[in-house]
Amino acid sequence: MSITIAIYFLINFIILYFIGKISYFLKLVDIPSKRKIHTKATAYTGGIAISIILLFAIILFDTFDKRMSLILSSAFLISIVGFIDDKYTLNIGGKLSLQIIPIIYLIFFENLNLHQIGNYNFFYADLGSFSISFTLLALLFLFYAFNYFDGIDGVLGFTTISVFAILYFLILKHNNHYLVEILNVEIFLFSISIPIIVFLLFNFSILNFPKLFLGDSGSLLLGFIVSFTLIYFANENFIHPILLAWSVVIFVYEFLSINIIRILKRKKLFQAGKDHLHHMLLDKTKSIFLSNLFISALNVVLFSIGYLSYLIVNELTSLILFIILFIIFFVFRFSYAKN
Image (cartoon, rainbow, N blue to C red; front, side, top):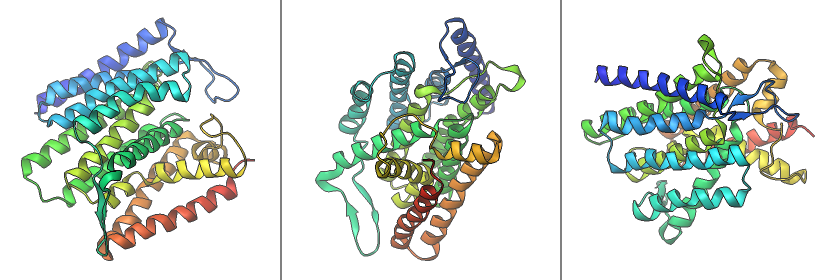
């Protein structure tokens, strides 16, 4: 296994470096503009590179079950859609029409849809006939929540790593499955996390690596993988659904808050702007590092609060607290929102 991991690390660096170099040669770059904070044309192909690496992960580790492998291979198609969007700027309808194909396949043919959202002592939240429609709405919600998050160097990468770290912790603490099955899940989470970590070296151009952005190919890729991983874990009863929700709490809170604020201020939804949490923090701290640290830490802190309420009290209390903390988060976001 150690040799496999070493080979995997090497593949990560080779693919990211090669994709970076060829992207600049082919001028697959994001040009600076008034609404963007970067000052140099930067390759937007980080997501494509990660999606290719994950195809190698399926072959190298060869321990994933069929649905794990399908999540990663289907994610490659989602990344291609994001790349097309980066290159040609598709409208919402155009993106959805292309994204829906792998989504429909996983939901209808591989049964990767939410059947229930947990037992809360007083009631069991079985979705029944609403299973597919609820799953589609939840997926699209989280896809675009991840897409919203990609605004400054590192923020989506670091926050996504915090999500996988939380899921790894939960897998170790809350499951009654066989050791081999859990080991495979741990390898699955590891194989996804490593390309993101290595990508950050390119994102910040450390050691003079060619600078890369995730682009829509990367933000949609990560949103897709996280969304279907949460569904997979819920269906396999690895982790209670409310704890899965807490693992992505900052994405949920921020996406809901920013769109509610835009509605209240009569602004267009799904339009690029600088009213995101990371932009607000960057304005205050003048530091990308501190902004990234704060957002990732906030996701972990909020999860910890939800996790303790789950352990000390019960599932229903954790669900209620999830809603209460969102209201508090929204009030703060609205107070500090830009005009």
